[in-house]
Length: 217
Image (cartoon, rainbow, N blue to C red; front, side, top):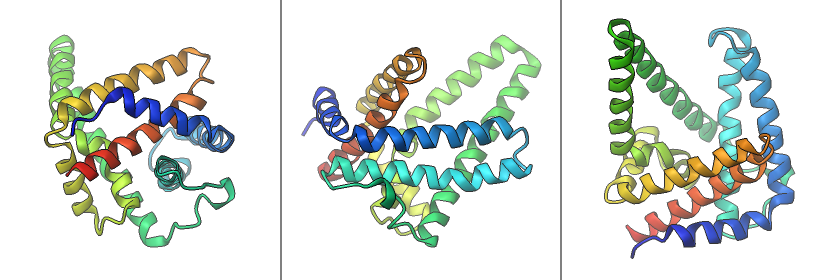
């Protein structure tokens, strides 16, 4: 069955609107923590850099777990955000964070190498390479954290399952990404405060798409 973008956002907005009292404080806290350690993080191997890496899985877990529960019409409470988090799950989230950071670092290195020869051609080639990677691995861009919350057994299986969810759905997911991107640009334009609404809507929308693709498989 074809997934409707309109229906996804209609459902997601209804769910987020009924949970803004939960989401706004959660995302405000995430933004404050991220900004604080992001400003201090001049070097990944510095104290603040290491703390930032160790905190990132907690932020990702809080958002993903809450989004999945709300998309499934389950109750959430701010004080119970980390109730189901154990050390094993934290380790898996940390591994995904590290893998994504390594991938971004490699892409940045490639970009710097190409720009060293010719800035214009380097930027064009890097953009095309990133677009091809993003399109091919689009499931991995969206779903690893959601698969972990849903009980995926290990990191490699999580990545494999996320990749497979993107197969056959790449066109839809690419359109979905464009809508999310534009939505959050609007949130930023609203003096940044709009992100307190668009960011929760983004996470819940991804959770809804995740469930629809999973149930369709």
